[in-house]
Length: 397
Image (tube, rainbow, N blue to C red; front, side, top):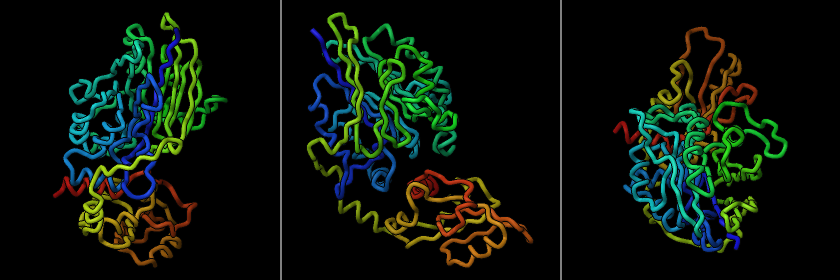
């Protein structure tokens, strides 16, 4: 008699469980009931990523996202780079209250010990499933040093190979949850990203025999396909979809059929829940935000003392300051010539800091303005500036 096992996956929820407006992630409640013999896992960037999650961190010892995760019924969760944004201690506090197993095989403490278990084994309808957690190797490249102090993220490939070799003979099915993206087209196998080490799904799967299913994320893209016999799913952003990998086993527990797909969350029954007090959140947004340290924060974050900082804010409350920074590229760095710089300086600025030698003819500026020649753009940052500044304030007050 055959058995079908369903591996259901989400990624990059980023805390979007707002009471008001459209929150597709709320519909994930009850997802497992739609699929028999299922295991539900998340591939990271779950706890951090919008002003609501900053409110949770600022006002709640235990984030309401823990209750949400437990209500949805996650079996396994993996850390993403942004889950460390409020520090390791904050993340570990949330993990203690999760009903899901929290696993990652390449995140170590300063003394060389694993911070989380590298894998877990679950049994579904008599089938043993091993799930390995994995974080992008380039954590240090995309996260601030202050955030990752005490955290060492080792190269993903050798750590993954070690755990697959250890796990393969113990289980019937090996699944990996990876917080990183896909660097090649899954059909043509042509490179789609530079080989920075941040997104390595194709490399990891093709060089690690023994993986049956692979869930990735990080890029906020929707993708699915196969790399050799390994099923791959990438489940988008904010819970607007989920991945499903199904495996059919015969009586000898051999896989006879495998299939992957992406399913949009709006096909699920609508669910609404209040995981937090909306009035409390709105009052928090209406409070004035201490802006005394904003320039110091930007100088510290970008480690550039030799540049100008030009920031315009719409007001002084949290809500108004949030609206001043475009998502996802809150601030950008431009390199201007003298005439371009002089024209740019004519604007009114809430914060205007210049650090240039007398007679300078070229100027590097950091700004949240788009009123700059785009051909002078040199760097842009996928950062939640408001969220990071709030964390900075907590550390310096």
